[in-house]
Image 1 (cartoon, helix red, strand yellow):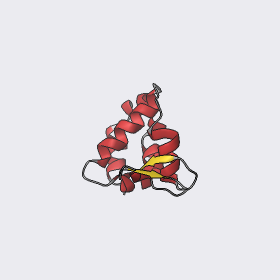
Image 2 (tube, rainbow, N blue to C red):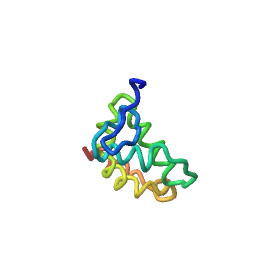
Image 3 (cartoon, helix red, strand yellow):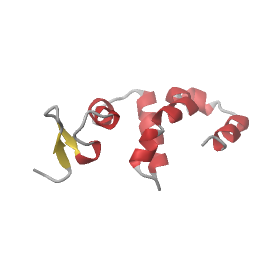
Image 4 (tube, rainbow, N blue to C red):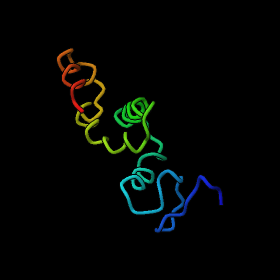
Length: 95
C-alpha cells in the first residue's frame, strides 16, 4: 500500500493526513475534502482555509475551522464583501 494512504478502522481508504481513527479530521476528509461541489460557500471556505494554511499546518487551521466560519459569516461571500474596516480591525485582534 502507498505510504500516503491509510485504511481507517471503518475499512475506508483515506489520505494519510486524515488518519485511521474516527476523528473530526477523518470525517472532514470523507464528507468535505474529496467531495465535488459548485456551492459558493464551500468553495470560498476551501479557498480561505487554504490561504490561512500558508505558513501553518493544516491541523492548526482545521482546529480553528469553526472560528473561521463565525468570522467569515458562514463563508457567505456577499456578507464578507460587505464587511467594513471596523469588522476587519475586530478580526485582526481575534486570536
